[in-house]
Amino acid sequence: MALYLLFESASGYSLFHAYGLDEIGQNTEAVRNSVLDLTRFGKVVKLVAFQPFSSALDALNQCNAISEGLMTDELRNFLEINLPKPKEGKKAKFSLGVAEPKVGSQIFEVTKIPCQSNEFVLELLRGVRLHFDRFIKDLKPSDLEKAQLGLGHSYSRAKVKFNVNRVDNMVIQAIFLLDTLDKDINTFSMRVREWYSWHFPELVKIINDNYLYAKIAKFVENKSELSDNHIPALADIVGDEDKAKEIVEAAKASMGQDLSPIDLINVQQFAQRVMDLSEYRKKLYEYLVTKMNDIAPNLTTLIGEIVGARLISHAGSLSNLAKCPSSTLQILGAEKALFRALKTRGNTPKYGLIFHSSFIGRASARNKGRLARYLANKCSIASRIDCFSEMNTSIFGVKLREQVEERLDFYDKGVAPRKNVDVMKAAVESMVSQLTDDVPKKDEASVKKSKKKKSKGEVVNGEPMDEDKSTGVAADGEAPAEPETEKKKKHKLTEAQQEDGVAAEAVNGANGHDTQQNGAAKKKKKKKKKDREESDGDVPMETEGKKKRKKKAKTEDNE
Image (cartoon, rainbow, N blue to C red; front, side, top):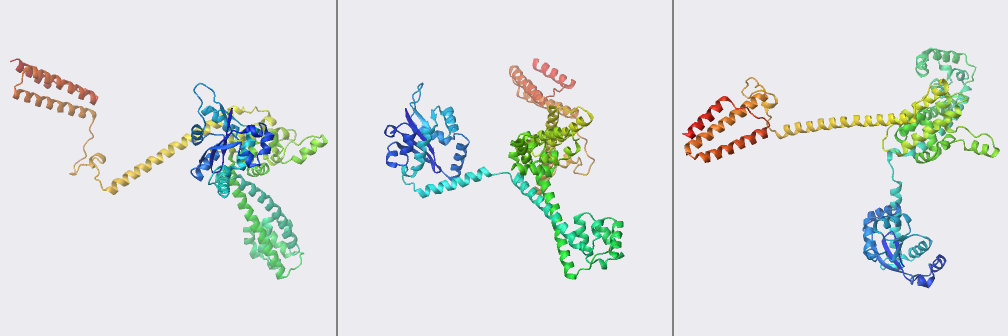
């Protein structure tokens, strides 16, 4: 059986015929030994056809299709044109060697060309790749390298493409920086307290908050200059007038030593740095909250921004967290304790990072492990919804949080919680109703816009408005005419038909046609009237005057 090789290069598709396998042997080891020698390998394989890619974009599309195991139309045409066509009803006397088994199965399903992908074929393709520039004329090695480099860059860039609003790497960096800032602010605040306590030691016991302490140290400067006039300003900073008075009284009877102006300036500058860092930490936290609501709204609603960000950071990405089973997510962050327990054959940890959730703190000591397992299950569901859902909604997170609350009540009070199926159905229904509510609003907005455009177009074009229809006011300034009712419209139709009938009769009488012709004309007129009445949808009633006229016309015809 003949063997053909399909080789996908950065410059195009190529088809080779392995015709001289008997010279080197049919086994893999013989092919592997002959690959490096072009004189031997050139006798085994020869080029049958080569189809270059039309552009770099075409090369990228073909590369993406091959990597996903798909056969493009270009590849199918290339194979059908260059491979020998088997006779109808008979099996092909050749096989096609491919590097990707998925591509081979796709080719066989569509074109019925038998394909194979094994170690022997891969060794032959390795030799083709090594000597590819020698098989094709007018192809320089430098050109092939440029094509490979360009396609490699574009393929990697296409694979790394992501939604800018859903970049979990920003959350990972933000939570790392937030933890570092917390440590640094605590360290610097302790340094400010120690430094300024030499001058005003009583302030430490009055003010506990680090940020407020740095702010007051910056405001007070020298304690000896503090007086009752500074109480309103201190009250604005502290938020309590009694504490402001207490600070002033403590400053008057302080046991601290005096500092030189240069030392006070340094203390103030350092206190200002601590204040700036605290304010930046607040802004960074707000940024983290917004990013978490964009990236993982359901996980954020369920467990909070900080804990959710820590889980994503520890897993490496949101997709990695979504791939984790709930048992792994439960002890995420407690790996050391887990392996220590496995080594010593002790009790394994019940929770890791999710211990910082408020749900675990609210549970009793007996139920902490059970609730941690349940919470990890819900976090796993929320992370998968956030990762793979195209809609950015927090409805599922709200429902999952309600389930955890119900489970807490079940552990404490024995109240039976709802089933997960019912809760998920309710979440899906609420999401569908929310979508249906959004659609009419968009339609109303589009209708309003179209009306505005129409009114603007009429004003710009200067077309006369139909005042009688729109406003109902006559042009002569008379009273507005009443709108025509359906009865009046029917009455007008009957009058018009009567006039038509009288005019036709007068014409027939003047010309003096025969009775047969008159009868035919009347039949035609009746048909026309019936057609008109059917098209209008209203069958007008014949009046008594019209019947009398018809009788007179018949008597005249008979005479």
